[in-house]
Figure 1 (cartoon, rainbow, N blue to C red):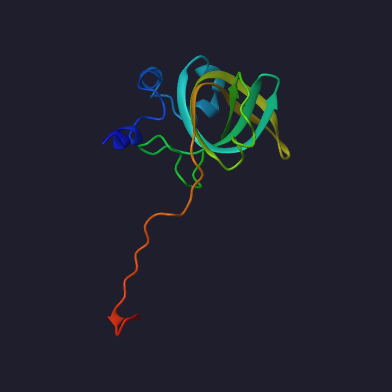
Figure 2 (cartoon, rainbow, N blue to C red):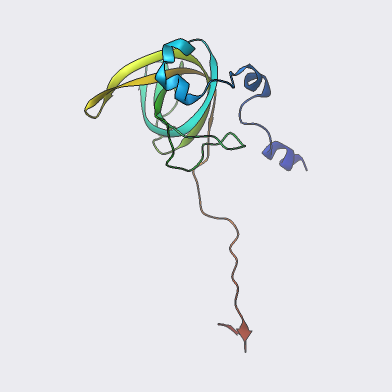
Length: 154
């Protein structure tokens, strides 16, 4: 029973979730990050890249909608990219491209950086809480249906 209770624990604290601005959507944020400066927001997605500097980590994330567990959905649906800033070291081998994260952070505005051949305006969040999801594995129960005849399944 205790294991079930911990399995259902939220990945972001309830207190932080209460403080987050639920009315702010990513589509609104990406249009004008400066307007949302200072607001606390919950976002998630897939890490595209990361940069480690002295006592800080930056992650570029492809935004993806969150499911009921606050986990980024495995979908091609995205409304853009955002940057996550952490004022501490996070190992880039662990926070690696392709990993899913959920972030509750304060909007700091925008940062304009090159993205291939364009200049892209990234909304920037300073993380208050971050959850790194375990890599997806295909290991659930397997079922086999067949008819047994004389000890052999056909």
